[in-house]
Image (tube, rainbow over all chains, first blue to last red; front, side):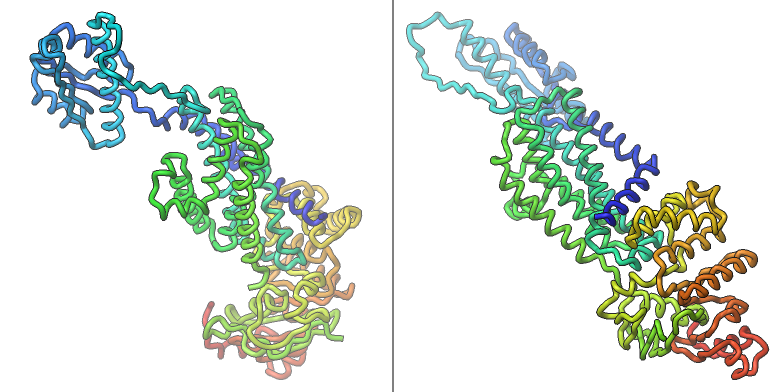
Amino acid sequence: MRILRILLEKEFRQIFRDPAILRIIFMLPTVQLLLMPLAADYEVKNIKICVVDYDHSPYSHKLINKITASGYFTLVDYADSYDEALGYIEQDEADLVLQVPRSFEKDLVREDEAKLFMALNAINGVKANLGGAYLRSIIIDFNNDVRLEWMQLPRFNPQPIISISPINWYNPLMNYQLFMVPGILVILVTLVGAFLSALNIVKEKEIGTIEQINVTPIKKYQFILGKLIPFWVLGLIVLTIGLLISRYVYGIIFVGSITTVYFFAGVYLLAVLGLGLLVSTFANTQQQAMLLSFFMMMIFIMLGGLYTSIDSMPDWVKTFTKINPVTYFIEVTRMVILKGSTLVDIRSHLITVLGFAIVLNSLAVWNYKKRS
Amino acid sequence: MNVIEVENLSKHFGKFKAVDDISFNVSRGEIFGFLGANGAGKTTAMRMLCGLSLPTLGEARVAGFDLYKDAEQIKRNIGYMSQRFSLYDDLSIRENIRFYGGIYGLTNKQIKAKTESMLHHLNLEEEANKMVKSLPLGWKQKLAFSVSLLHDPQIVFLDEPTGGVDPITRREFWTMIYEASDKGTTVFVTTHYMDEAEYCSRVSIMVDGKIDALGTPLELKEKFDSPNMGDVFLKLARKAKRGDN
């Protein structure tokens, strides 16, 4: 115990003696958490639309007004012809062309049926899909308005209509920040933990001090613990800063208990740091350690379920996400923050991550060799 | 009594025999000079004796413990000062002493007493709270040597402790080695300075992984009919086939 205390004393002294590192540890996550959620948003806005109105009737004006007033579309231009409108798409100045035919109002009034034409720029598939869907729902809405206007309050509805009224559980306003901020926080905690721990032992290898440690009767687990604990504390500090930002900047209030998040984070950090330390025992230079952890972190983050839904990944990737600690922590933060899940609800996550922590740290201790 | 007993010790890296079948003994209180050109295998041999490197073949006992079975026991009884500077640059002198003392299991009281006497002895009282990186090399080396003696080891291994150090500091350093030896500590030292070889109780000269000569400086000078150790060294080292590393 005393040896561990001596080791910790030394590690903390060294960490707090390097103001540049300290600034990076605290400044970067803060800045990222302030900026990233504003940009990382699945909602598609500012869809550029170009309208070709051959009809120029009150109804076509009403429809176009309704579209531009929805907030999702920005009107690029009223084009005189479809060819001109297509020109905008080719120049990438428009995402979408809506063409109103010459007889739109006439058909609507006389035939009770009118046709519209929509052309989408599908280079960005997500934007095209969502843009088309938004436009369609606005047009349906417009259609209902027209119907309501003409209806002479019949005794019964001539056509049976099934209408759906959804309730959005756990995130009623479909607020993306509520979904993204906890995820981004997880990534930041992971990055700080993994990189710092990966670089640390290697640094001692590079300077040569590790040799002096190896010639002392220190136990391997003592040395690894001495490296693990300081970064564990730093990780929890970063988490705390992040939680404060999400509370006071993004107004995210936990439905579940904050202790649950900390408890899980504590176990999770052990796994991430274990991985970093394992990298550190393998690598001989800081560059090697940096590249190796960068490579792993990229995969972990991309496949962690923050940016893309795991449910829609191919099966073999899904299997991989099961051994990705990041996946578990992102899920848990969302469960606890949005749904109010308790330790009992997240127990399988907890046990899995604890398993990772034990395996990775044991490997790190095993692979750290005092004698070569 | 022998504190180091080495029999047929070898270390191979693939086909390269860094240390090739060496045998020797060192008795308590000796200053044992371990000489050899660059790449002769001195550091590898020393690293094996310190339990940092696993031998390929051979037997050795250090401080009465078997090199294979009781490496960690050996580590309690030896001090080691590597070629590369081994103290933490970003810790102060006092903090370095506390760290290494603590790792060897010294109590706070012992550390405090050792620190004060060491600072006094090295005349570093004024600098005690300065970062080690701000010290001149000579002072750093003397400090590193003192730190390697913190836990009163039976044997201290010094790997080129005076490399790059000015002559005055070198002289002071050797005074410290003699003081340690007088207290009964065995000193195992490698060096490239032949005047330093003259100060040793016994000297071994390694050539291409093997020990080519072993004896007191006087014996070696007579045997090779040389006026000084430098001449002895040149006569032996010239036939080396291995180059600089």
